[in-house]
Length: 339
Image (cartoon, rainbow, N blue to C red; front, side):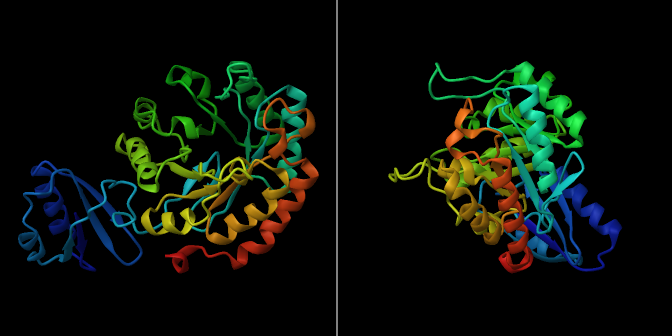
């Protein structure tokens, strides 16, 4: 349920209303926008008398919300959420570029790629230390050593880092990681999501291979219900009957999400397509559709990459893509016009 407060409402009356609602066993999320204040009521609102609340002097209107996700719902939080990723901002008009190799392979590799992507305009370095692979015989990542090498690149190049977590027991290794990624296979690992809700660090939540947008937002709700509101959604393609690409990039998910949620949205054209020649066009499509950022795989030697070389760009190719994205951002459907 949402309670819309009148402009210039008496602050004392407003606090009394909030206290009264909390006394009914409800959680109250207060959202103060530039022109409007909203109260989002979370809990069992079936016994709440809307007419009584609507009759109060400070209340403009009351409406019920049918969607099961509350914290992630734009109806409760009309302004875009802005998330700080090690000092780099995303959301609310801030566009974030994330780039780096699928897997961390060596110190020379990750530091060299870090320098190149930062020079091209990337704000965040990605690199996989723990790698969930379909085959048990495929490269599984350097694990703790991979995290250490990412931290070395962060120190050496001066760029924030993001890497994927697979087990909550690994969380101590992520203390100095700027953004924690939850991969597609773990989107509905609810125990992991609950634990990540207890920390105060940005979480990039990838969409599952065959999950609906509502299921995806409910996974975000697991994190936010624990008190961590720093959630970034990442569209990385979904599984369809098409075999020409690795997955099918759901570009329409971007404007749908901008309508449904206030959380920032990132598009990953690398995993979505599986082919490096498609990354530029899909990156441009993601940017123009209203995404708040892009995540692109970049490797110094794609033919010899230990994982996902076919979809990785060279540093020179990333230079070209980054410049092309900057050129189209002024024409992107972002902000209020996207709603």
